[in-house]
Image (tube, rainbow, N blue to C red; front, side):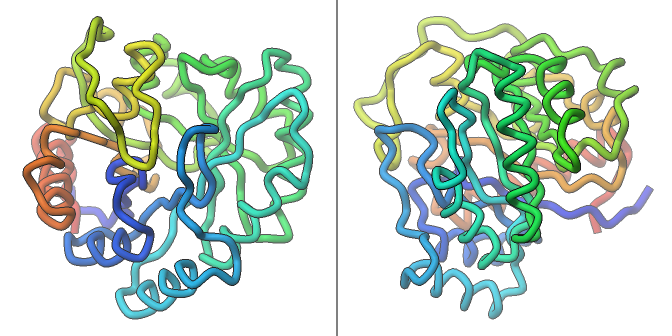
Amino acid sequence: MSMKMELAVDHLTMLDVSPPDMVEAASEAGFDSVGLRVSAATPEEEPWPMSPGSSMLDETLRLMEDTGIRVLDVEVVRLRPDTKREDYKGVLEAGARLGARYVTVNGDDPDIERASETFAALVEDAKPYGLRPLIEAIPYTEVSSFEDSVRIAERSDGGGILFDALHFRRFGGDIERLRGLDPSLIGYAQLCDGPLAAPESLPRPSALPRGLSTEGTDLQFESRAMRLLPGDGELPLAEFMAALPSNLPISIEAPVLSLRASLTPVEFLRRARRSVEGVFSSEVGWRLD
């Protein structure tokens, strides 16, 4: 079956590449859109200067116009026990300037009721900016399960869910429950690959891009730096994708340190795009136009 599906690449895939260069590389490699990290995900991470009015944001906008590349999502908003509107206002402003559709949200509040209320408030605050927040369940955060993410999204007026193939496997996601979920709750999905079993005792480099921490659990480090491109591992990607709505945007989130060390950004993204095409054609029976 031939179909036109939006294919994006997430910024974590090449976090060392600036947003303007990310747009150029994605265009050269044949992608439709990008995800951009306009706010640091962790305290130790060095953010790219992407606040409204910055020269980097203006340059990104110019290159988007030149190339036709769109912004699928901006990240990241973290739901903490004390999160307030001013904590994420800059992300919403940058996202609106970039014409993004989604805001990625991670949960760091152990009180799921309070996290639901904060997310619902964020959803309301994001509406004037034309943005839809998506909660992402990650096994090493407080919002760490399919059930948590669905509960939080359903209690908002218009918020949704982002599913990541690696996290879905690591938190023990149920494909049947995913298949039965209201498709309107799902914003888009992130693809990568990896071993079936969670890793142990992963070797750590001396540093990661933009000051990302090399500490933490093996699950955290795998997610930040040791994923595989689709088709290079053992994850049941065909089942995962078949359970999703067929018109859903797909974004590659696959930081692979070993490949990035030997390939330029454009070379890496071209290889990443071919990997997705291979999975779609051989495993799912779809062809990307």
